[in-house]
Length: 175
Image 1 (tube, rainbow, N blue to C red):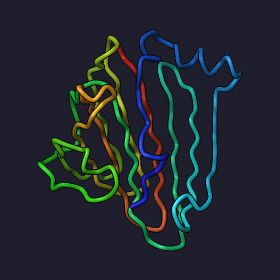
Image 2: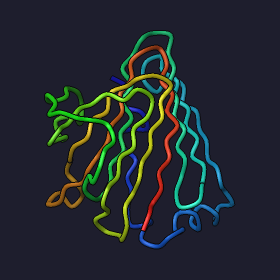
Image 3: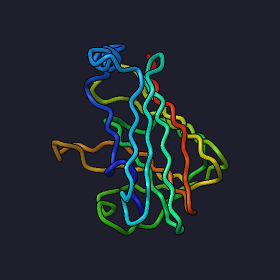
């Protein structure tokens, strides 16, 4: 399995004020940030572009290899899962580094897109994450430890297998 992005994207207190993340990035004069990493995981190249949009970000992620792999992209959110438009069922424990920390695991299948809503813990409003893939993929939701460890946070993970995986994701905070 190839965890994309070093494991997690975390939504934190920077969302407390509308547009705070946009202002933070504008201080660096950036509306768009992109990077490519070759050999991120034995023969896998990962590319990522994050674009500022009204109320959030668009996160475009791609991974490619000459060999087949299972690609996981996970987002952690300090809050609770409110809704998921993909039907899920209890899932078996996932194997691999870091996966034993995932609890309350649910699994479903998305044809090309999934929309997940989270109630934020440390800020007003909700976070809406819409993932669009280039093919059908698996969707996992659940909880995992936060820092400090006496609290938990929610996560959503999308998983695709093949020589290549492409996702275009939109993350927006709504009142």
